[in-house]
Length: 222
Picture 1 (cartoon, helix red, strand yellow):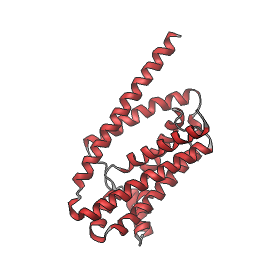
Picture 2 (picture 1 turned 180 degrees about the vertical axis):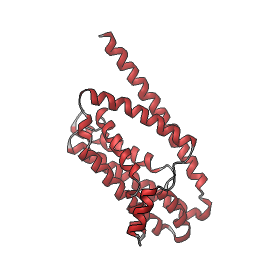
Picture 3 (picture 1 turned 90 degrees about the vertical axis):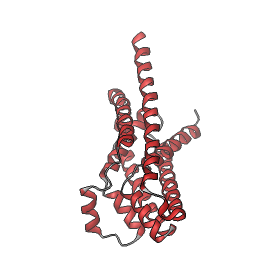
Picture 4 (picture 1 turned 60 degrees about the vertical axis):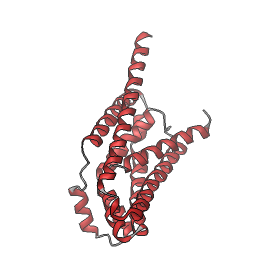
């Protein structure tokens, strides 16, 4: 593939996963639903933009600080298997129940910083959710192990840009839907979207698991 094709693949990977990780019910989505219904689109979208910026920061840190470790040898193979388990577990979690809407670390950080603007509210709520950072560390390693993102700055930058576009698109779209529907856009609607995301992740996990088995059989025949 040409350099442009590699960058497009990296950008598309970031875009799809940026949207996918933004869908599950959590502090940011619940805040956008509640605040958007009361204060309108502008307030809700500023919360989303703050959340998107912190998400992108976590993604960029994951790529710069950890991902290159997962690109070679046995570590790469372990990450391929780990990503299968990760997608399978996350898909099941999204289908079975909603992730917790708050966490103790996030609550302590929010109490200390006292965000006064909509933008900072979204920013702080993602910053306090360290699970988001952990997800991006695992995903960054998985992207590189599968060669969806090469360990070069052009691909990493394209992926981070895709994440920015994906998360922003989701939060802006959610803000718009909430401002139009007011109280009609309920948590149950978001839960249905989450279950759809879970089904998609399970499908990806099955496809990925099949690829691992095929590679093992192919290597065994050599």
